[in-house]
Length: 112
Figure 1 (spheres, rainbow, N blue to C red):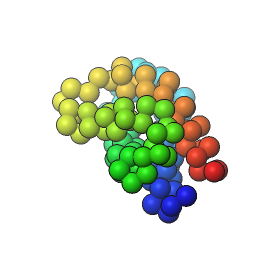
Figure 2 (cartoon, rainbow, N blue to C red):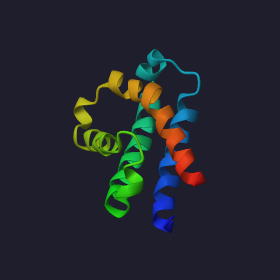
Figure 3 (cartoon, rainbow, N blue to C red):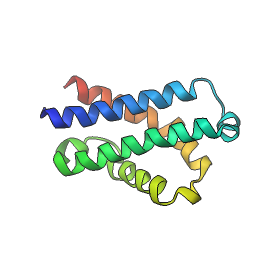
Figure 4 (cartoon, rainbow, N blue to C red):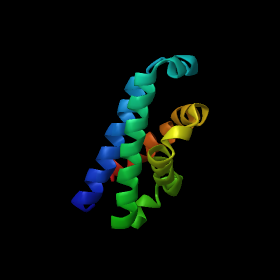
């Protein structure tokens, strides 16, 4: 695997792990009440999305092995450009349903 590809996957892996640590055992209501938590998670999603955007350009074959890779890049754009219309329920849904899949896929790619 080219070093730049590995670095981008690692950056995504680390950001996903941070989200997991930030959330811990918190609930959706905890998430809604804690603006620092929301901001921290959004920043990590921005990192994941930016790394994915770069991966798509540098190594599209590897990027395509990640479920919803284009949606991941698009979510970063929504967070950055649509900062005033972020839907917390959508973000929480991504945390609880999509992030575990991404973590698993990144772990598998990093082992290859």
